[in-house]
Image (cartoon, rainbow, N blue to C red; front, side, top):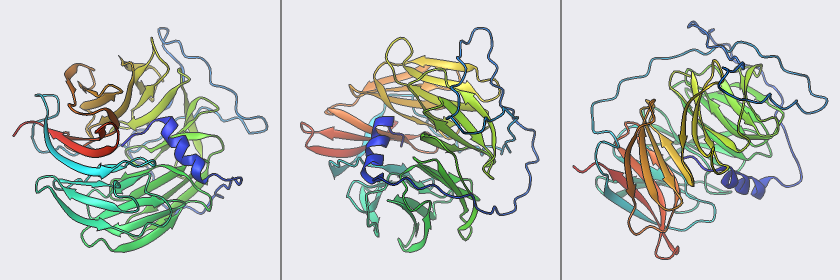
Length: 391
């Protein structure tokens, strides 16, 4: 689930305190070098794209050069044929009643089976089977706050979620805790997740980045990127990290040893990095500053050019399919839109009945279902609704 910058900063304010701690660079585990062709980052712009130069780095910091970016691109597995979102009007298939939470509710689809994980019950994660409409068991052990991120391994066997400055690991089938990771003593994790079976990464508001090997949870690398980091991605292919630096108005690209290999200037001041394409050649940003620029932009990592610009006013929550062929967007009036990618064609527009506000959106890996965290009954009651094509 993707949240706006305001939500990220609200969570950050709870744990920042007065101390700011960074992660020192650590020793990296030896990894094979990428074998595929590199994808360069080139910040030159075509004539029709008016992109201002990036702001200067913080005074006293060494200036970073624009260098080619090496990204190992992996083949995207083909999903089994099924009805994709947008091919027909969606139908409500399940609803999970939850209490309204001032911390928000995080949720994620399991990559295997009809299961949704959510934190709507507070200091725990509930596994809900929407086909059977039943609770499949809870994940307990949180001590600080409800999780800001919930991640599942590609085979669905492992659940990882943050707990304040800690990152806890559970066995999905038994619910047993099997590990604990730490990013920094003072940490506000803003993005985390798996990349294939070999990498799990996390980044916090201070720019601390760490990567682990889920096969035993040994640390792969750790570094700190100075700046005010609002969003971060481990790019598909697993050989580069993209961090959005709000002060410098750039997307900074690092290899896994913490060396900056390039950057992409952000044309729009109020933009947020949301997703990276499976081929690691494009990024998707949400521009939130009103007409005429508000909406979704897909930008080439090779040229920095805008490849697709979908203008959407008052849309706040977004989800994209793993294959990047569907984009879902929800506005403040509970209107759902589904677009096809890469052409940006509007496939479906539909209102959610009985809903007064939507506060989150997620898409299943195969783009067959959507989950929306909604408020009902004059805002006093909440629910996670699961929508799909009529059966």
